[in-house]
Length: 250
Image (cartoon, rainbow, N blue to C red; front, top):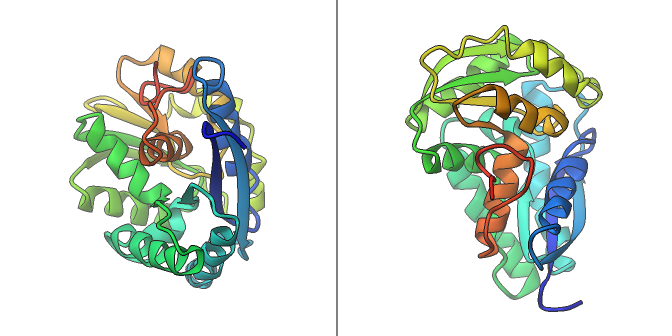
């Protein structure tokens, strides 16, 4: 490997099929305009249904995943499940990320930057300097309320949210992203400074992210786009990706 090749580590739910699709797709698109190259490496936490019990058990398993990815000496590690963090309580990403980083450094013998999709989303919203947001999620309404509460605790105001109410995580990954073109008409963006098209790293949105962005005069982003943005930042690279919404716009 050359100095311009980076190993991207991802901690993902066992039923997640989207993060290992969308993050590589975005970073491959970046290769069209930048010299850096990337490889992708995952460790999985067991989770089939998006329930509080399975989310808590999965989060505990993230420690093992951090140790496994440290064995591969990845250059950055992303905890790629937004709701696993957010369901554990307000501000939990600030507790989880250092804990995983400590385990990774202990195993690898060198520091490895660690980020989470939950932290990345709120950091991206702060970077965009927005206050009021609209949100689309695949979750049942109580879990969407948890996500919105978490985001609001980080200093934002959720003006409206749309819950697609799909409890099976595998089914979430099989949702047709083109249907988001209709869903965005059902969420009230009046007064919103930004639209989170997919507040879930399992719900596919990348194929229509730029198309939806073209229909709005406010930033449109997704949890996976925010994760990619944070990965690039942690690597010290220019966070630009073509066709991936306002957050990553070249």
